Image (cartoon, rainbow, N blue to C red; front, side, top):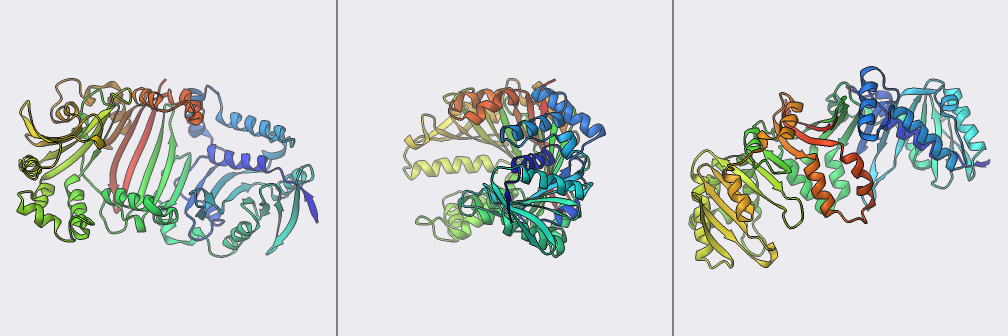
Length: 518
């Protein structure tokens, strides 16, 4: 039996409402995860009807960012507007709200060649399955493009239309899937094995934060493998530097709204590597106060030592054979093991208001003079071997070397050391400022103080000044990037972004907070 097109824009908007307006958190809804296929890469869950303090915070943020009194009312307004434009009007208050339940979820199992999610499944709880089915039938009868009825394991559904989506009521849930095959897989998961039954999912989702707007589960290793190529390698190195074994890692991110800020709390369970436990906040606070962004790395020496071990084991193709890098450099007076063991924290800062003025440096702290000795020996080695563009540098008690080449641009890479600090900068000035800045530091800056205060007991590991960072972005991003320029009025509301990191047992934790202007 052929029927007309179901109002998928309306149902898609309902799903958007589920994600944008959800609240609650702390524990996964086993019912919602029951529709996600085993091995799903991503699972997002939340509540459709925030209330109390959560609703007040969401509405407060909506007022600050978008100038509206109620985010929920705004979403409903856009939902109804979209439906009218598609010629399939719906009255949310009378046709949807009476049966709309508390919970909603979205999951997907694969990505395509462009890394876009595929095999999407949405599940929305209902308070009245009969009324939900009547809504689906009514929209089908008034639609424009044909749908066909289907049945699978006792579940009736509609499939077809312009995007070949499938929609049906399964027990007390409205399920929307990317095609008939995916809908049937959701039914199989519901009636059999699902993501909710997997121990790694249960362990990860248990770390979701209370009072969240949304909770997002990610299978990091599977996501990296699905994306393939260079991203998998880069992601692996990044997570390894954070003490996370990407291949076995999962993560849960919880979005937590407050009246004047939005927080994303992240918990990632690693495989064999213990998460870092150091504190680089003192180093970050000592960086130049005109930096628009800075990020620090605790236990930098330990992570560097692991990376150097891997590099030595693999060698450099066409240049250094495996297991020869360390011994070769040591014979020339550069001991990489001593260098790594002497280093403690690291940090990077960036500053500038245009492409031409953009500059920055990486700053490392050491518990001895070993790092400074290594810098001196490396400079001598490069000059003695006739490396082009290498020049000795001595300035304000700092010493080291610079490397200049056409590939590096107008400024040289400068490596200098002074006391117990080493700096590697793009240009001499940022490198020297990284060693000892005599003017206002980040710890003196009002927005940085606000960022530290927002994190509370969590040590700050990253910072960005909202207006300064946006000003640079506006100078760099071309007008053809319409999405960015449409977002600028909202981005102007951000005063700062703060990142804090730590650990909880075998899990690496992080907090990202965006502070908004009043």
